[in-house]
Amino acid sequence: MHLRERVLGLARRHLNKGEPIPADLLAQADSLGILLSELEQSTNPTTEELAKKERKLWQTLERIT
Figure 1: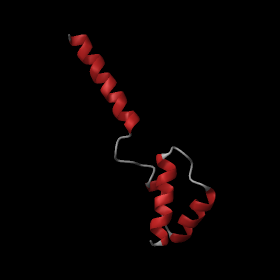
Figure 2: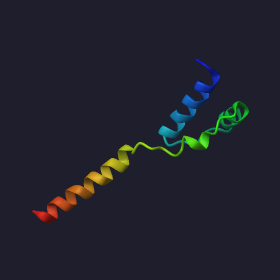
Figure 3: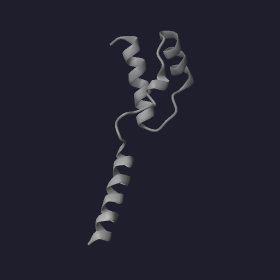
Figure 4: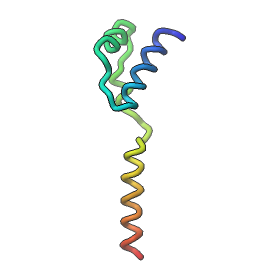
């Protein structure tokens, strides 16, 4: 595995767990020219966001019936 892939994978793991990215990992990414701020802008909805949408949908359906 390439060092860039390793750094990106570790950063994604921390973000997925809701943890901050450690300073040493940020320093490694910076030395490799990787912008980890790009990772924080997820295009996929999280489970929590999907659950909120589903609850709103159910509330709307309950009002209709």
